[in-house]
Each structure stands twice: as C-alpha cells, then as structure tokens.
Length: 180
Image 1 (spheres, rainbow, N blue to C red):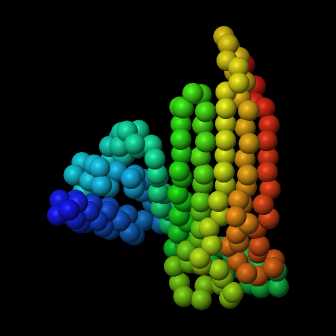
Image 2: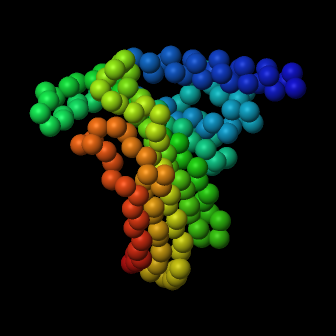
Image 3: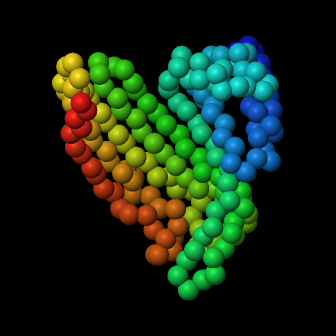
C-alpha cells in the first residue's frame, strides 16, 4: 500500500514537471500513457523525449491522453469574431489493436475554456465520444479488404448550449476499404 502511494506521488511529480515544461508553448502536445503511471512511473524521465514516450505507448497500448493548447477564434452569427487564448482540447483514446486482425477504439474529446465566461452559455462538462471498429476481411498478395463502422457523437453530447453552435446528433458511417 505504501509503495503504491509513493509510486503515485512520484508519477504526479513527474507529470507536473512535464506539464511545466510545456506550459508556455501555444501548440505543444504531450503524449502521456495514463495506465503506465502505476506500472512504469519510475521509467518516466523529468524531460521525456518522443522515442521514450513511443516505446512506453507501444508496451501498454491501453489509454492515451493528449493535451493540446492553442488559440481559437470563435465566429458566431451577429457577433464579432472573438479570439480566446489558450483553449485546450483534451482527447482520450481507449484502443484494442492487433487482436486477430481487428482494430477498435473509442475517442472522447471536450473543450476547456482557459478564461472565465469565455462564451455565454458555454457548456464545459460534455464529452464527444466516437466509436470506431475495423476488421480485415481478406488479405492476399497486394490486396487488402477492410470493413469499418464508426458511430460519431455516441452519447449525443454538445460543446455549446447555443443553438447555432450545437454539434450534429449521433450519426454512423460504415464501409468497405480495398487497398491494392
């Protein structure tokens, strides 16, 4: 029990150091493997490089958290364009890959406004989930056939309460890919 608390504390300190490094960058992206915080927290360097993060993500492949920070220009009908600084879009991906030629993942994203009352009626607690499924049907020399299904906006969420800013409702796409 004590070892788990120490490991969690070290991981939190290392995550804080990583976040501090990229705090002032406008379009910085940090790739963190959340599930490995408890398994591999001692292997995280204070200043990670891309190869280290890639090797960690290849070992676990369970849960990835992406953090983006950038400026956003909001244009609404009958209003002036508004520039909102430091809008962060967070995305979590749960994925299962290479299981008998199947690939499935769920994507969730939400917007966090870095300023108070950035948009009147803004909705700050919703997540937009997409669910994707791919399966290889036929593979031969030079030909690959893949079936895919995607359900967009799975939980019918919305970024904004305002009518003109709502996302489309739940929708689905499916198809057959042929590569040759």
